Length: 206
Image (cartoon, rainbow, N blue to C red; front, side, top):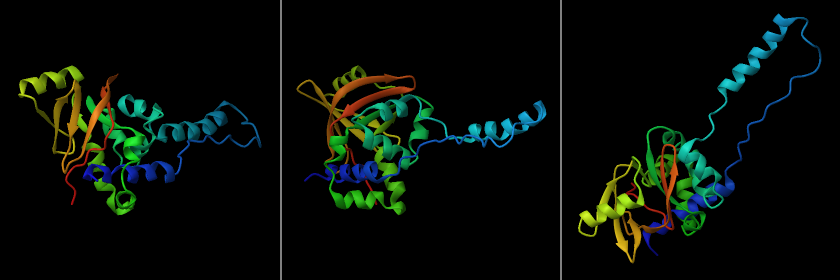
């Protein structure tokens, strides 16, 4: 079994075991109406403050991933590792593994990544799938051609991904034998681009 497959199941467990965080708004007690406008303002102020303190909803790339039915594992993992917030700023391109890709990772690695003491390693795995800037499939094909059949891009995690063309498809290789093919390119977002892939890419851990 390739090393790449050491990462799918851990994140699948994350998707199935992580609690669902739903934002609830409690209705104020109907005990007594404010006596005047000033009292009404005093009652409204705490509610407004609570609303402003609520966590921001995902935007751009993170929002699209959260909305996709085949990326539930990735969406949950991004939130758990605190990576979703990092995808809300400058343009990024993410190579997004499907739930099926994550499901191929063995349970021991899942348990290890899901350990609260290993959140940093989980974040490394996820950011290894992200590169700065908006990179299209056309850009990748051009870089592969210019590189004589191979191209590399530095990831947010710090290490590089390698790209090659195989029978008209783009293959993405990580470290230690991990790899995947782009199955759906160019899901464009306001702050970047998403390429769906069928494998989980692994950085150097440890």
